[in-house]
Length: 566
Image (cartoon, rainbow, N blue to C red; front, side, top):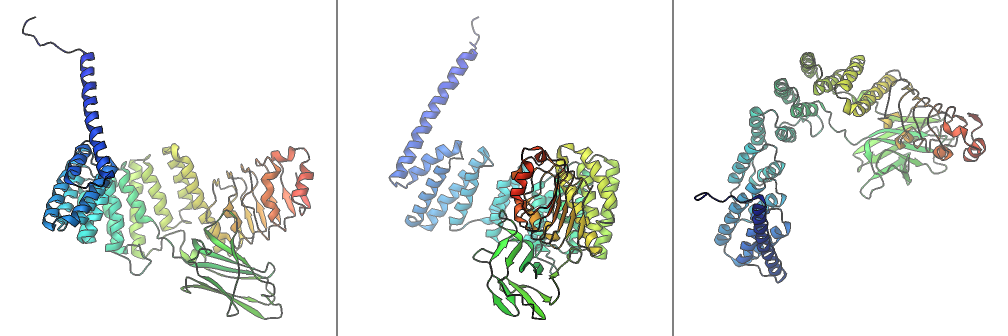
């Protein structure tokens, strides 16, 4: 046994580690307390830097200590010469690099580095940019480094074109670099803006070359989501400009309704919405269609008594929004019960891209390429979804049947997201129905037996008088349904509705059919009490009809209903 080293048991090793941890903990606690005491007494010296350095070197996420270091450096700015301060801050940068080796994703470390550079008499931004490039080679998805790089770029005045080239370099070496794709999407509109269209859009010629870049990426690795997300961004439509898309006036209701291109709050202090009637400004109170809607695409005002005079041959109504930058006007002639002026969904190209011949040709080629890829990768969900989006961009009505079939395949390929795909499919079905309604120049929309699970674009249905939602999978009629201010007849049979929240404040609603749903309580029908013209109500097949005193309670809630079918 002589000459052999004695091996320590597991218990002895554990005890030694415990003692070592306790020793380090005592040292750390003592250093922490010393730092706190110094800060409390406002002792801002180099000893404070050394104490905090000991702690932050092992744990860079101690925010209070970074704050203390900044206070010390701010004190040094007043006490020391620029040369001495420069040397201290350069030393600080070296210390920060050591901290980043401990934790490359430390919020405090990255923020402090930016602060140090901003307070350095002679910062070397070029070196910082090079450092970012090296760190991103080690971890291309370190979003802390990406955020810091954007700070460095803004301070050093590096051009967006140079950064765009940088993203291309990274993407070319690895198509799976999601952060580079995202950064590229923020740079393209600035480097190649489309001056003929709305801001934040990219010049069409550049878009076409981007399609080729991203196509190479997803053909290289069809299952990597980074390129597919970027491709979806390329196909996306720009946010609509803030405009008044419809101005509607009702003689009978003595009210005016505005529909905006996107939700706004006309009651905010900065809002500047002015109504002119016959060229004179008129003070009115604006409200949304439903109490829950604070930001809304639709706003209503009741016109003061006498505003619409039967003796006048016509009345002009004009809206000024945003200091008159946005305007909309319509005229109500004598003998007419209503009047409106609006932009149709077809005119605005709301539901498809506004394509030139060249872009249509390229997108058709892209669709052919994706279809070929789908044949090789039949269960690739990203490819299937992109095919659907390309069809929507090219011709939503022409590809309607194909789109619906691809949705079935997509749900089978990715059943975990079937609910999302159902809602997206519902959105596209409603868009197509709106387009068909407008091409037919009718005010009736039929969404029955469409397997709809959610309602979209209800702000586009302000003028609709008849709506059929029967035989779908709707679980609720949301508050947005109250935007249908001209609705007279609603059919929503054979769904799974448990309430009628959106049937609120509809001044022209006369008939509602809710057969075979899941409405269980009289209280669930409360919103209908705010519909003054409601006279016909069908509740057959709902649990509520089996309640004791159902008819008497309903008569109290809805005294205007003369024809109850239960």
